[in-house]
Amino acid sequence: MTLFILFIALFIIYLILLGYQGITTYLIALHESKLKLESTQEALKKSEANFKLLFNSTSDEIFVSGMDGRFIIVNQQACDSLGYRLDEFQKLNVKDIKSPRYRKKVDENRASLQTAREKTFESEHLTKSGEIIPVELKSRIIELNGEEVVLSISRNTIQRKELERKLLSVVIQTEEKERERFSKDMHDGLGPLLSTIKLYVNELGSQELKGEERSSFLKYINELIDEAVSSTRTISNNLMPRVIHEYGLIKAVDSFCRKVNHAGTITIQFESDELPPDLNANVQLILFRVISELINNTLKHARASHIDIRLNMSDLPLVKLTFRDNGIGFDVQAVLNSKESGIGLKNILSRISSISGRTEMHSSPGKGFAIDIEFEI
Image (cartoon, rainbow, N blue to C red; front, side, top):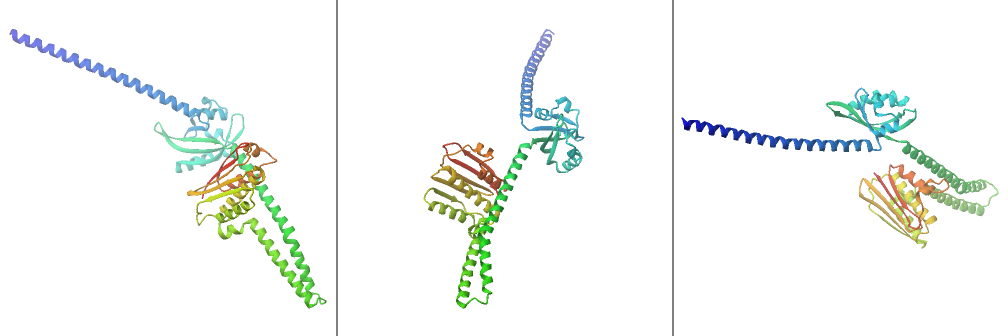
C-alpha cells in the first residue's frame, strides 16, 4: 500500500514537471511569435511609409478611381496641380476635373478601357480655379481590395506642346526659305537661259538669216540648252543630291567631306557602318541635310581644325549619329533661346524631330561642340 501511494505521488510529480515544461515551451514559443509579429508589423509600417513617400513624391499625378468614376485616392502632386485637398478629391468624380470638351468623352473612354484593360488618352484637366491643363493620361484596370479600379497616371504636356509648336514654326520657316531659294534659283538661273533660247529660236525663223549665221545660232542654242540642263541638274541636286539618289547616303556624305577636306582649312574624319538596303530615301536625305548643316555651322562659326563624324548602325533598328568638333564652343541654350541666331541648330532639331529622333548637344566656350542623335528605323 505504501509503495502504491509512493508510486502515485511520483507519477503526479512527473505530470506536474511535464506540464511545467510544456507551459514553459509554450510561453517561449508565444514570446518568439510576438517578437516575429512585432518585427513583421514594423517592416509593414516601413514598407507602407516608403510606398506613401514614393506615391506622393512623384512629379506625375496619380489617380485611383472606382469603376463608377468616384476617386478613391490621389497623390499629393494631383492635389497640388489641381488645387483640391485630398478630402475634397474623395467627393469628386472623374468628370468633375475634365474640361467641357473632354467631359463628354469620359464614359466612352472608360468603356474602351474595360475592353483593352490599358490605354493612353489625350485629355484636359480643369483645376479648382478654372484653369485648363493639357495632359497625357495612361490608365489601366487593376484589382484593389478584391475590386476592380482604374489607376491613371497623368503628365502635363504644356511644355511638350510648346516645344512641338516651336519646332513646327521652325519647320515652316525652313520650308519657306527653301521655297524662296528654289524660286530664286529658277528665276535667276534657269529663267534667263530659257528667255535667251527663245530669242535665238525666234531668230531662226527669219528669212534674212544666212546659212552660216543659222548654223552659229543653232550652236549657241545647243550650248544654252546644255547650260540650262546643267542648271536644272544643280537645282535638282539642291533638292535631292544626285549622289544620294544614285549611290546612297554614305557616298554622298563621303563626297561632301572630301570636297571640304580638299580646301585644306579643316580635316573631317567620317566613318559609317553599312546602310540597310531598304533605308528610306527621305531618312537618308534628312541625315545628309543634318550632317551638311553641322559641317556648315562648324565652318562658319567654330574656327575648328578637326571634325569627327560617326554613323553607327550596329544596334539596328537604332541608328546613332555622333558629331564632334574641336572649335571654340558656345552656350547651346543661349543660342537656342536667341531669336537672332541658332537657325541652323533649330533646323537640325526640327529635321530630327520629323523622324521621331532624340538629340543631345554639349558645348561650352573653349571646349568644342558635340551632338549625339538617335532614332529608330
